[in-house]
Length: 437
Ligand SMILES: Cc1cc2nc3c(=O)[nH]c(=O)nc-3n(C[C@H](O)[C@H](O)[C@H](O)COP(=O)(O)OP(=O)(O)OC[C@H]3O[C@@H](n4cnc5c(N)ncnc54)[C@H](O)[C@@H]3O)c2cc1C
Image (tube, rainbow, N blue to C red):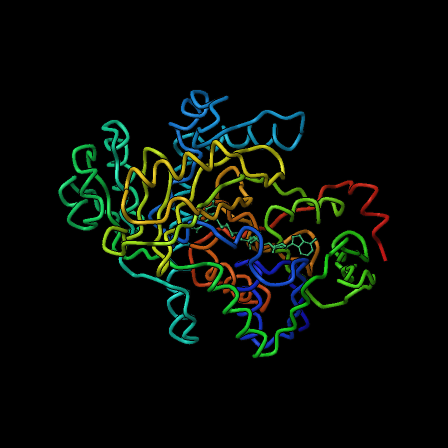
């Protein structure tokens, strides 16, 4: 089959890799000049099955209310006159119900575990160098109430098969001695030895290069302007994608199947077809520092619960990422939020890095209310989704790519996950009818 993948972030690139391995002729359309230039560029770099507890959980609504209007809040909801944001907010509240949270956790653990194993296999096969470390993820707490809450979550995670172990403050410092200066404030932690870290950009660009050598046709600098349809009812399908290339030339590309992997921008691409994705962009920040004293910088990937920041050592660099702002598609860097990251990192590891020359970055997490991604089929026979990976796209990336390749090839992926079947609205928007070709 000939397959076109829309988007070359970690999700689109992993999809292309596995589709190629399954014997399909694959093209990837990407508006940027290379792979992984948007959300998969400078994230927290954790492969964290242990973070399967979604943001939508019973404790979330109260916390978000408390944080409203605070410029340095870990999660900031800026109200906008925007229908999608309000619908998304209501759906998020529904996912905070205890039973929904537990079910979402179970599904996320399943796909994330499958994905981590898949990543390990790809690493062994390709030898891609991405500054990875297999030293686990250590989550530490400075608030007694938050730590007590984490005990139940860790127990649940163990029941779902993720070995997240609750530990004492002394054990936290034994596992990561760079945290010794904070010992008196840490009240406990949890450790997941099987989790990993590594540079998502280096991995994705490395995989794109290998995929290109294996025959995948990457069309960089090319923007998808719309999807074209043919047929009606059950026989409706996608006939092609209209693109504009780097020279401003419009053309239509045809294929047997199409995969939407355009992150937060997937929503607008398929809305005219009568397909409603509940994805809202969650702006997050990262700061990257040059390590000046390797012994003072952590090597175990960390999660600082109080500040909702994650820390990953990438060779001679330290990446610190976190916070979320629900405020449309802007990627503008807010100074207050950037400086809050540097202040906290300097407090944790005062002598480890050059804090005077940080590289700040912002990206848009494609957030579903449940943090469960859309992977699977749609109401158009040959249109598939691989999007909405929210806070865990790097963690779930390789597994999602492998799963969509299995589905397109007519097989059932070997993972206990409810794959998507997104129906069409009964009355597509007028724009969809206009897109018939
Ligand atoms: C601050 C921060 C920290 C994070 N930390 C972690 C972490 O530690 N671990 C983890 O697992 N996840 C983390 N994430 C989440 C993770 O980065 C994302 O889930 C993941 O990168 C999403 O990948 P994607 O391929 O879906 O989207 P993207 O990487 O955004 O890729 C989508 C691609 O589609 C292209 N595109 C869009 N529209 C078009 C169009 N019309 N035509 C052509 N191309 C188009 C874009 O240019 C882009 O390259 C973090 C995210 C943020 C913001």
